[in-house]
Length: 428
Image (cartoon, rainbow, N blue to C red; front, side, top):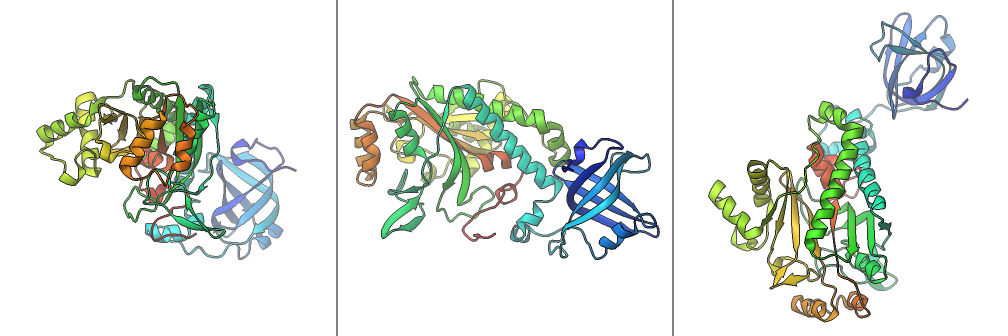
């Protein structure tokens, strides 16, 4: 007999179910077990007189154990678990559990020590399913838009994007690095003629940051596509991509998210507001008395991101806002420039930056000059070669999936990630 999931049970049909024991209650005449699988839970009602053999098997069995039952599901008006209960005829102990070391009110670091136990909660199961739906919707949109999914190396011979904030690893007597992003290889794919590519993969940042949104390893959803006219085309595509992802989430889990997390899944309207950085500075000063610190002039920081969201909601009634026209000193060397202004943007959602995107510089001589300016030419010689033999105009962006889901559900990055990696955490 094949296993049946709890949400697929049919009344009075001989069935086999299996899952974790969520609760077990022993009364004078009955034993009640709440059994849970990935689709839900059901009460197992065991009559001690009729099922003494099953009761004997359950001796010393506690919550967390994995059990298999054979029997029938019946309707019962007396059962709170959806008016259904399971009457077992056979039992098989698949795995005995010890008492859980994780208390209900444990702090986040203790929960992370026992992450596999922490993830058993309904809330965390929903969280991971929401993240999966978000990626599913975005991935589907890319396929429908004729993109090719690629898989780029994470061990690289030169530091990507800059010479800092990379993890160095030993590589057969040489130095190698964990990739900060697939940026160089996305562009190589376009130089090879693929035209439209995307990747969903890990990225690594050696940032000694301990905040509610930073992590040393995260999952990045990267996009790059060719034959664009400007970075406006990149922003247009990102709008559609996010709408597709959020629509998928709302369709599958919108009501459940509202119930469990108290958050509304809002499908944004196009176009998203677009504001130049200097104009934003003026608005933040006029409206909120905020002046950007000297060290952040030409860029944004956490406080200005939060205020930009407040401004977007007040002025445009919109949760998203694109910020453009950053200083060239604050942007990567491969961003195209016009009149010395990088042709790129940051996208702010719910007070946090979720994307840096741009039109890339595809002309070899100009790109080399910008590399020289940043002192990176020797480090990225292999990258420059991609542009020597012709490359179409192109642009792209990356979205941190974990940060996106964190903002969607109102969590910290430690809570949201399947397994968190930070400066002080390498386990489990």
